[in-house]
Amino acid sequence: MSKKKKQTVLLEYQQPFWTRVKKDLRRNWFAYFVFIPVLIWYIVFHYLPMYGVLIAFKDFKPLLGFARSKWVGLKNFVDFFSNPYLFRLVKNTLMLNLWSLVLGFPAPIILALLMNEVRNAAFKRTVQTITYMPHFVSLVVACGIIRLFVASGGPINQIVNFFTGTEHSSLLNYASMYRPIYVLSGIWQGIGWGSIIYLSAMASVDPQLYEAAEIDGGGRLVKMWHITIPSILPTIMILLIRDLGGLLSSGYQKAILLYNSMTYETADTIATYVYRRGLQQGNYSFSAAVGLSSAVINFVLLYISNKVSKKLTETSLF
Image (cartoon, rainbow, N blue to C red):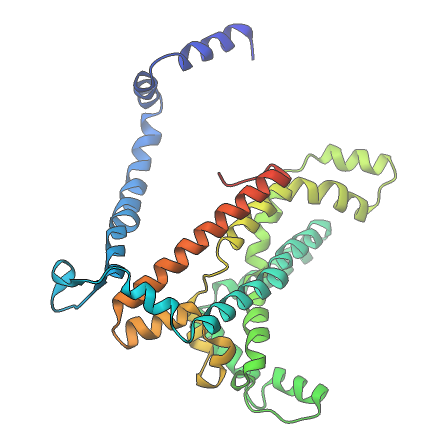
């Protein structure tokens, strides 16, 4: 940047804030115009509904409406934290997310690293297409496939029977089998789609770094360890922070499609409990209180993991 241009930039930043805003609006008016529908969508569907969080502090009755429902303060929160199932719900939610984090988080990274080393374009496209496909399959259909595969007589069930030497009914009827099935099926569904982000990050790595490593005699593993992984580390950390910030969250759709009363011991999570209490039993205020508590704890986890990442790797979300 030339000296004259630097002086111009400094002069602009010395101007009052609203003067700079007006100038930027005139300069980039089209970008702001295109952004208006996105802004409206977020306000209408994300920010205005936040007012409904107050339902967690009320004894909401649909016939009375939101405004006339009785205010009960922290009663719903006290009921949740004194619930006899609280330990099981938190434990199951954490265990499922920790299993997914330990086994599922590295899977797309490993696939992307392997795909980055493939030089045969046709083979690479074929593998990418096969691994991407499960992501586009409806969750209901995917869970139906999982149920068929682990049912009595299903291929996965037959493999388990062969190695254990015992006959099993559907593996989803065993509490000990639920977590492996849930996590491994999640890896199958998301490994290909998740690798796209890392492949994009790898595409931006300077080829001269690889050329320099080859001149120094570095092989593929050396280049992967010392060039590729450090180059995509910021991307890895951002996604890791996101996942750590959701340790007390779990999608209820897949869990509801796979679990049953025989697997509540390991399958019943905060999300499924909220579904049963809120929608099936009509206790909307209680389920809102549970959801709000989970969201607050997740935010604290996100903030802590972001701080730690910023201190250790200088990469953070905010």
